[in-house]
Image 1 (cartoon, helix red, strand yellow):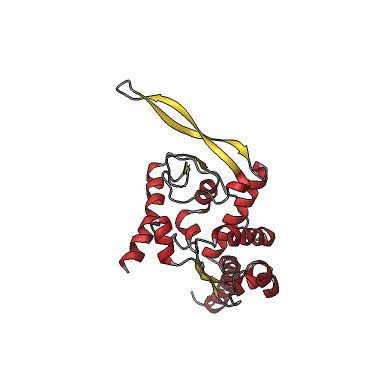
Image 2 (cartoon, rainbow, N blue to C red):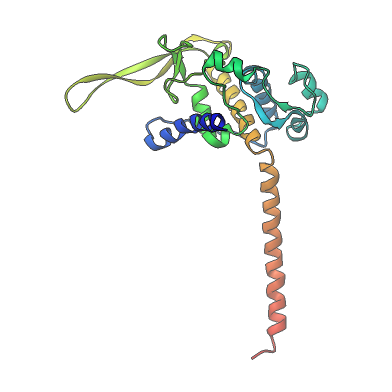
Amino acid sequence: MKKQLLAFLMLVAPAVGLASSGEVHLDKANIDPTNQESLQLGAKTFVNYCLGCHSAKFQRYNRLARDIGLSEDDVMQNLMFTGEKIGDHMDTAMTRGDAKNWFGAPPPDLTLVARVRGVDWLYTYLRSFYRDDSRPFGVNNVVFPNVGMPNVLWALQGEQVPVYKTETDDDGHEHKVLEGVELEEAGVQTPPDFDRTVRDLVNFLAYMGEPIKQQRKALGLKVLLFLLVFFVVAYLLKKEYWKDVH
């Protein structure tokens, strides 16, 4: 229980620090949770690039068939590669022991990551890795400094390098400050295509955080419409019942 609490605090703490500092600009994800093609492409990217290390243990494969416009055969043929059953959770094959040995700590589950971090944070984070030879995996991140995660999407994006600017503090000392990143070596996707890939992935992560969000919103509109109609009926009944009361 203590290990689970520690892992959760490690996941949330950087987001709290970012919210308090307000120094890092977050790009707008502009996701569309009603776009099933985007959700399908996001699911494909998640399975191919994220599920090897991160689990989504509160999401079942067969739910994808109901929610994002895929059949169970589509899910089994395109999103399941290690002999899982259609009703299984989307769990990683990597054991917690191996994850601890390789990464120092098991990578966090991503089912609720969009609700913890926010879609804009995820969209900016996944596009903000840059080369840093001092880090264990050779990369760092603008949004999440000293991140312990490799840039798993580097083949798609290419390699980015940091851009620094010089600032002078109140004591007259000069310091190099990270200003941004720039693409040094192109990947297999163009920058607009890579942005679209990340947007689809974030869209899927947001869906996993609350699969019934669209149904909930649709039901809420129906409830509000019912209350509006009921109010009119109740008001007319009130006038009818009280018309002779002086």
